[in-house]
Image (cartoon, rainbow, N blue to C red; front, side):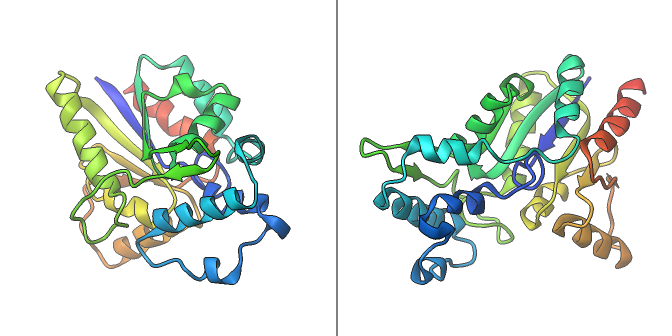
Length: 241
């Protein structure tokens, strides 16, 4: 039985938030106040749609955006982690569940030659239109009250596991690697033998620490990390079992 590795993207695989990083393409590297203040909680994708329209209106096109996105650094140890996964790909299935967008993630993985490490990427679909504007859409609709309107990572994870089960694939362990508040929902899906791996010092880790202090029941184990190299040592232990 394989191990499923589910990764967040922003501040997990890359050491930045790709959506806020792209703002450096804007004039003076900032947004107008009315645009900046137009964000409403739970509607980030719609906000980014307005940001991409603004960038397009300023004449910012694909090549310039691609240069900015591919200049983002990987989080420490992630390159080593992906090389380790590639060498042991027979033992791992690897997916990304992200609130970024398909264009940004493809650019980053392609530039670093890591597309082959991942079996599937679940994120908001994006594409450039005929006028050279980047258009982003919500990944799906869902009824989860905890998550932003465009993406419940728990729903994505459950649907992926169910689909795999129907194809006869059952996982010995699910390892969820993330950092943010929207990574909490999929972590609650984890069961015994599964591992939540929150990035140290970020929202997910702080929330899980608070939950354990409040003695909230957790079947899964929690292992924090600051570098992908730490994740490798946990995975080496799992594949030796």
